[in-house]
Length: 599
Image (tube, rainbow, N blue to C red; front, side, top):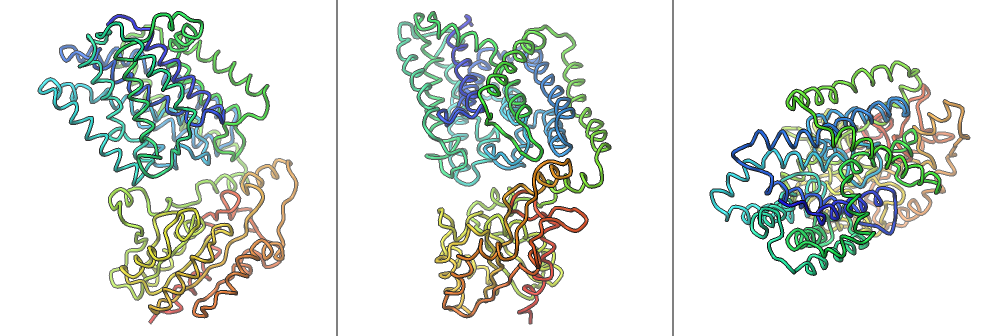
């Protein structure tokens, strides 16, 4: 294939969008769509570069170009985090490095929250896309074998992957985002363009560059339109309709090219230059941003506080990208297999001693504080439940053969925080515990309606409903409606009142306080009651008398409200969500709820 500057322009434009998005530019709301462009380009190039008669050479070239800078970034990030960050952050980077060592970063982050969540410290989050790409490279020989047997397999595989993506983004947007089977169609669009619409990658249809220019204009416009990466559904979600437009626009450029005049402009030449360094820029930019802006327990911070910070970050990105390109990406390495094996081993093993030595430096008080981050259970019902039972709205948290009764726990993330303590007590008392899968049932932001929840309650033969929300999560009208429906069916209802909220991230506050930084925080019993006055007043006015209310003030706010135990163990892992330790402070309350109506 003749060298194509238009592909470099695509690369440069894509990495430009991605970096600006990660730098927190609000105008570029969907800059992450640049990754979709990379996927199409990768599929295109694999169709051109792969030769089934020389598989070994194909993989050697991929390894020599991609893996040295890839592993260099992982190792430098681990070391930088060890030097700069607290054990809480270093531990998370170590786990990310281990997944990255085997090109499974997409799987590692799938096990976390959404790509768009900032709760975790994820300087290696961007490696998810490289995990997907490398997994695609591994299956290229198999795909090419099918395509040699019949050209019909390519549109079959492409449409099948797209169909699965449409379904999965309606069930689990995170799974559709991170996993290759639901991204394969993007690679195959590029593969198909190279295989059917070019001369082995070179332009086949001459004098039609204006069509490619239309594709470029579309690409430039799309990232400025908001795409909700966590929305359900192919129209609004991601990967979804916006990704399809991006991939189609990229395909137009790969098929028809771009006008030479455009390539020779200053903007064109600058973008071509960016394209030359795009892989190194992509690898280097995210760890630099996240580590530079990091704070203890601050998660992934992407917004700089000043223009000087922003300028410093951009300069660091360019400096590191330049050296990464020339020292690792453009350098010719020998002993390919040994290089890959050794690099993977170093990326997997090196975090272990670094984390060990980092933990040695912690005091007992610090250890208690840092433990709060992991002192919580799996989110809601777990990911497999949603995938294996896409239509289910509830799951069972216990394993009781002959239950004495069935309880359903209903609520948002605050109910999720107490579900483990609840399930342990229910299991011990031979009570079946059900839990709603969505995080926003009965809420005013589009959550499950009272009728839909009650339909599931009836079908599961629930005897007792327990409702627990955060202060802002209560929709009194929906709760009143559910209580009314339950009363008609002789189903008892208990409302466990909200736990106190704090104005600061509790582990972060405790750590800063330990280091002599920051002022005191406090909350009196009266302040807690005032915070929840609307909720309590609304519950008082519900005219159905047949439900119980369980207060938490005598647990967390006997006098002043408490955010930690007497020996310094946090009850919260952020500003308002209980740790497992904190939730077990409610054990007596939960036990009384569970056993109250037992036969």
